[in-house]
Image (cartoon, rainbow, N blue to C red; front, top):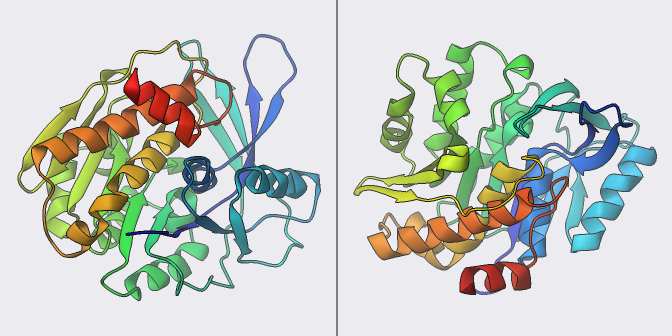
Length: 305
């Protein structure tokens, strides 16, 4: 695919980061789908982000942040709503715990005619009422559109495990690519988290990537699995780490989009290369504060090093 355009759908918000050291909280633009869209654009991929945010100072910060990377914005709700926030409390190990203040309605779905790839995930794909419209949009896409999905589970904002799992599996029936963390797998499939990749592949996904933090990730396909080591780095915080992995994964899979939508598999060398790009993109992001993923030049230099 040349000049591939990715449409990302989901929430935009402001991360209010409390480092727990007595310093004043710091505000960063965030939201998992926003981070993925921003990361894709930083890698030089034409990207449209369909989202909703308010006509307030936080909304202006989101708009400026996306414009800085060249992301095209399609607003799916009138600007009268306040901009969503997520209070992120940084733990001693660098991980973050979140408290959300968000509504997601999705009353005005974006056009999809220019999209070769559609990425959906997190609150935007799973929280009603907006998730109803997102699912309908995804299920109505032409079969040659590559769909990628990251549930990025936020339990406090979701219905029961049973209901959420059914929705995740319904997305997996259309998405060729699913990425989830080991924490997502443990929440969705508490009786056997290790069964998550096989269950999602059985629904129809062609590739399922499961991240395991500092232990790396595992890329699963019907033909087997490939373990991808994490790239060593000094982590400042983990905000946006999974989202950066997702944007790197999508970018690396673009040359294989036709094979994925056509039902063909990727060979072991291709899976290794795809996993390495995703892991490197993530490692470069956690090495600096907030969700600031690498540029195409930074990623190329790291891969060459």
